[in-house]
Image 1 (cartoon, helix red, strand yellow):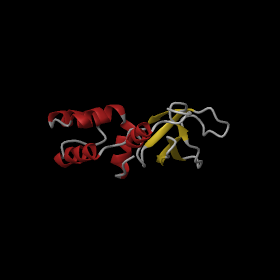
Image 2: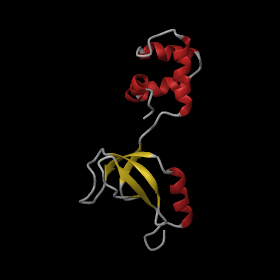
Image 3: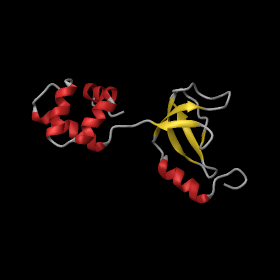
Image 4: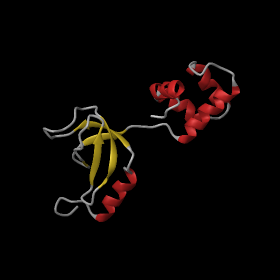
Length: 135
């Protein structure tokens, strides 16, 4: 960092770590215009100064300053997990809302990513089962 700005390598690393479309959740931001803590948003990109350009679900566009603001990536369902869900469903062995049975079948099929995903993100799993939409 020179003059308070990150160097080119740091900016490139940020662009790799937070590509456009990445979902994040705000933990803290010291700005009177900040969205409420817990607000989620979508990364638009990373500018040349290393600021993470945002589109907040609440309607704002205040950028995140890496190293100053606190935020976390919101995990999303990967295509691999989606395919594993569909493979378990195709067996016809259980009601897909019986998450314990789905996890047992997934374990038998060596779909460990799905077992962990259900454990950590039951809400996203249920949303997919109900709507077919990935969050």
